[in-house]
Image (tube, rainbow, N blue to C red; front, top):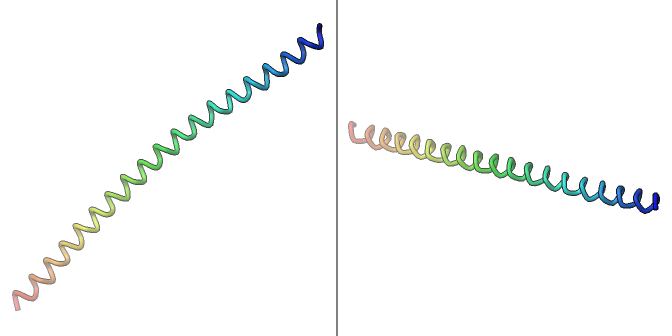
Length: 68
């Protein structure tokens, strides 16, 4: 009887350890997803800034040609 209880406690401990590790993995996955979203936002901001800079440079180039 004691051996059966010990085996059941070991199995229960293993199952609880597996559940805990799955919980940690889910939390890490959520953090990584948030980091990915932030990286996409940063990339989009950089792209919009580059477009603004390109448009300013184009207007300066065409404006300089028209003044001459």
